[in-house]
Amino acid sequence: MKVFRVTGEIRKPNLKTPFKKEVMTVKPEHAVEKVYCELGSKHRVKRFHIKIASVKEIPPEEIKSLLLKKLAAGEGELGKQK
Image 1 (cartoon, one colour):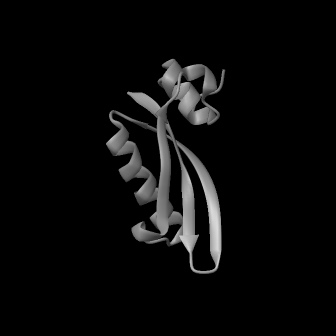
Image 2: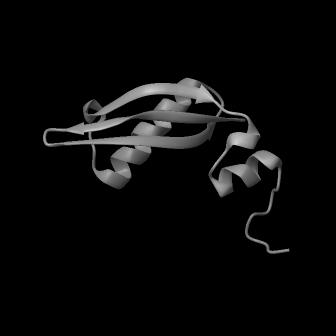
């Protein structure tokens, strides 16, 4: 699986909020769909209020999310401490 960084903006009538979201999917199209689902669920935003600016595949060194970093590195069991 690959890690994609999706950037864009939530445009509501009186509010514009930029966002960057990192997701792990197989294709860029799946990454966009996942961002729509997550933002709609967490922020109660309809799809037509979300404007996607770019979708880029990023190498493991540039991942900022610790959970995705561990998944990309291949650490299977995230709940256990060393």
